[in-house]
Amino acid sequence: MPVNAIPEGIRSVTPALTVDGASDAIDFYKAAFGAEEVARAADPSGKKIWHAAIRIGDSQIFLNDVFPEMGAVPSKSRMWLYSADVDALFARATAAGATVRMPPGDMFWGDRMALVVDRWGNEWTLAQRVKDLTPAEMKAGQDAFVAKSG
Image 1 (cartoon, helix red, strand yellow):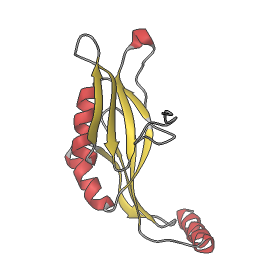
Image 2 (tube, helix red, strand yellow; image 1 turned 135 degrees about the vertical axis):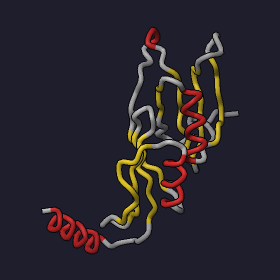
Image 3 (spheres, one colour; image 1 turned 180 degrees about the horizontal axis):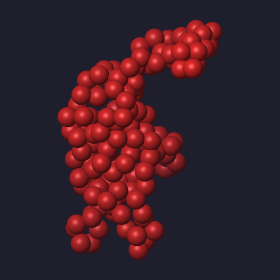
């Protein structure tokens, strides 16, 4: 039987985070974003995670602890997380301890979005499509935004 080149449940591009305290990060992502733990492989000491996978919505994210001796140093990333209710997701994330960079607001391209940061320095753009726009409507919105911004 042929092997799938891309494992079941994984997308072609899969983010991978290296953090100091992967177990704590998994717990935070569960609380903040409703993540589901898919897999976890501890190092021989049982204190650190060599590899873990979580699922948020229909996407997986890989995580591991810092292992400088193996070249695994902390990484910071920017994630874009779409949701059916960005305001509720923002409230959930901030209640779990995420730092607010931008509260929810409507954007000229048709999304409502917010920006939070986790304690590992990863930025999470929380978004919800609220209006489908034509290219002309988006350009008009962009022009109005630029004019207003000065």
